[in-house]
Structure formats: C-alpha cells, structure tokens
Length: 373
Ligand code: PAD
Ligand code: ZN
Image (cartoon, rainbow, N blue to C red; front, side, top):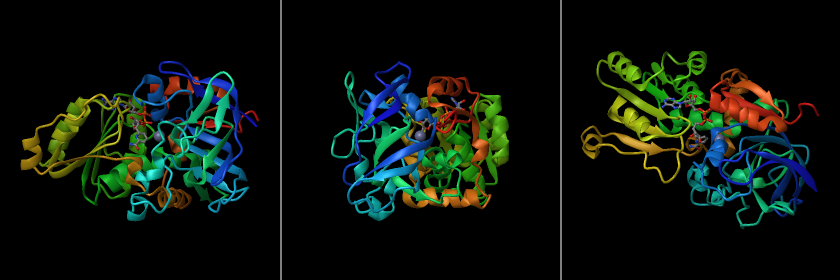
C-alpha cells in the first residue's frame, strides 16, 4: 500500500513529502492511521546532525492514531482501538521491563536506525530503497506499520490531537522532574529550557509540590507561558536564576536542576551543577551531538557536596503505565495538555512548523492529519 510521509534523506536537508510504499503488518505488528504527530526537537536533531541516524528516515516519534489492521498474533490492540505510541517500545519481559525500567527495553535498540528490532524496514521507495521510521514509528506519515510493543491503547473519548503529547514531551518533561529528579514537597527546582518538554518539567515539579520552580529561557513568550504551568520565578539568563536561587534558599542551592534546552551545552550542565546544593541532583534530558562532551564538572565538588548528575530517557517513565497515568490526570483536569499546543499544521506544512520551533514562537506544534481531510 501507499502512504504520504515526511522523509529526511540526509543532514541539513528539509523534510520532503513523498508518496512511499508501506508494508502490511507482519506478526506482532499493527497498521495505524495516524491522527496526530507532535513536533519534538529530537526530530530536528536529525536535520541538524545532533541525532546520528540512518537515512532515509521518516521523522516523528510523538504519535497518536487508530488501529486499521493487525498482523498475526497481536494481542495488545485490535482494529478500531485508539492508540498513543511510545517512542521506546516495551516488550514487558526483558531485564529492564521487568524491573520497572520500560523506557530502557531491549527491543528499543534500533530506535535511531528506525528499523524493526529484527533490522528490517516497513517503508520503501524505488528511488530511496528501505526507509526507516524514527523511534520505530515514523509518525510524520498518514499511515504507519509499527510494532505492537510501541502501542498503548487509550480511552477512545480522549481527543487524539491532544493525547498525542503524552507519546513523548509530557512524560519526558514531567518524569524528568518527578521520576529522575525525585522532586518532593517543599523542594526548590531550577528548569533550563521551556519548550514542549521543559514546560512539562515545570508542570511536574509543581505537581510534586515544589516550593519554588525557577525557570530559565531566553524567549519571553516561553517564560510568560511557564507562569501558567507552575513556574514561580522566570529569568532570561542562568546568572539571574542562580542569584535568585541563592537568595530564595538562604544560600543552600536548589534540590534539583533539570536541563531541557533544545541543544545541550557544557555551559548549561555547568550552570545546573553550580546551582544545586549538597546532596542534590542535576537531571540531563536535552540532547546534543553524541560527540560533544557536555559534562565537565569538578569531581571534588561532586564528592564533597555529594551531588548527582544523571541522564534520563523518556523521563525514566514506564510508558505502558505512565502514558495512561498522564491521560487520566488530563481527564481529571489536573494535567495541562491543550495549553501546550500553540499551533497545528498539515503534514505538508511540516517545515514551516519546525521553522516556528526554531524561531521560538511555539511551545509544541502538532501535525493534525484530519486537517483539510
Ligand atoms: P524546544 O526547542 O521546544 O525547547 C527548547 C527550549 O530551550 C526553547 O524554549 C529554547 O528557547 C530554550 N533554550 C535554548 N537555549 C537555552 C539556554 N541556554 N538556556 C535556557 N533555555 C534555552 O525542544 P523540546 O522541548 O522539544 O526538547 C528539549 C530537549 O529535550 C531536546 O534536546 C530534545 O531532543 C530532548 C528530548 N529528550 C528526550 C529524552 O528522552 N531525554 C525526549 C524528548 C526530547
Ligand atoms: Zn520527543
């Protein structure tokens, strides 16, 4: 069968909308009609060379859709089910899945290559050959054949064009504060970067009872928006945030610093390391080119002040549980999703959407496949 998809053929090239061939689902696989896909910065990293991937690849890893067809042996979902995809699959039985670390599931080994776990591809083109799907999904496509391990069935009354955000940005940010940072009532948290992921670190920190959520972003629109998500103080620079943190904590420093800037730098991690106090934690969520060594700190400072620096993938969530948990919080009016979406786009407008992300004019953009349909 055919699908229209946004394909990347190499670094520093725009997404190309092409009609490509899509395979039927094989054993354990599912054909999805895509409803919505979020514009996360991680897809832009493939354009800019900060995510090292195999080309050609269909971007998109924040996905929601409806099951059109299932392959042999599929048990998690059935035709007609509404699904939010997890950008890391979860088999449920590997060492990581069975110890509460589904985000690290062994079946996710090929998420950057974009193949299925067995190394084969479901999208093809006579000119381009085999085409990967980023994070085993390739959500910037009207239809996608994905593993059932990537699918989480969700309540069918939820709007998929909002629920899509719990496929990556919301649990990643929320979990960076709550799971990886371990924010507790009364803590002081500093968040660097207020995009579609960072805004949810703010939301998560506030949810967990932080006394102060101190935020840094150079873009005024992001800082203003953060105040609606639970930020108590917002600053354009890390220096201003550091001064305020010292004053607000009587010199003790922050309990957590969450680094969620678009492209991680040594400066941000160093600022975060310096802003936290004794026994406290820096969480690194944002990504940079893997060749860039972004963590350079004093080991003695780390020892004598017992500081921790940790990375987090998917906010250290268990997607099969946390995607549902986030949506139940949304349904109960306790988690903001609608307010994260600044603009929606058609698939053909994808490059415009990513230009808006670069320009700082959107928190999250969403491709709505039902627009103009
Ligand atoms: P985004 O581009 O929407 O937001 C990034 C924000 O950072 C923007 O508001 C910028 O203005 C701001 N910013 C840039 N430089 C600085 C700085 N020096 N100090 C403070 N703020 C700054 O991106 P996003 O929210 O979609 O993604 C953020 C990062 O998280 C990005 O690197 C992405 O690849 C990564 C990510 N990680 C995971 C994971 O599992 N670890 C998942 C999803 C996304
Ligand atoms: Zn993402």
